[in-house]
Image 1 (spheres, rainbow, N blue to C red):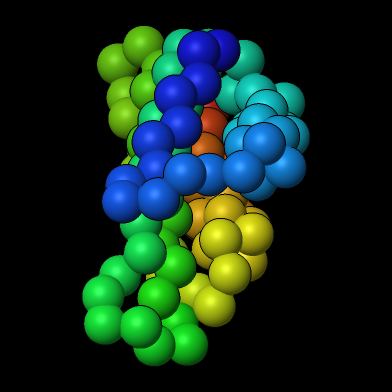
Image 2: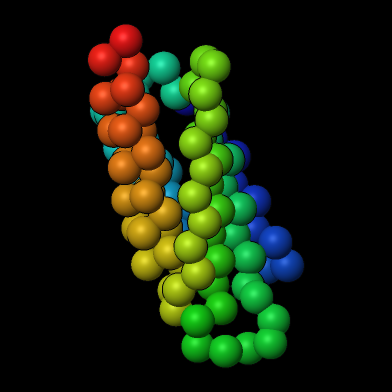
Length: 99
């Protein structure tokens, strides 16, 4: 799986990037065919407590999954976004199994 992390209007730390890699790699256990993971991190203006947004797009042959969450920290946003993607992948696999 190729991973691309883009931090918009700021520089992501190495620790944050490795955290993202660890979390997105877990999605491969649910669906082996994942080819790409694109992660976009944004700090939303104006400065408020909940201003860290994470968007993740996962691509597999014939299907894309997308989730976006805004939280107090990027780690929390990544956790919630990955949870949402896990649900989408599970639903997709259930539908595929019924066919």
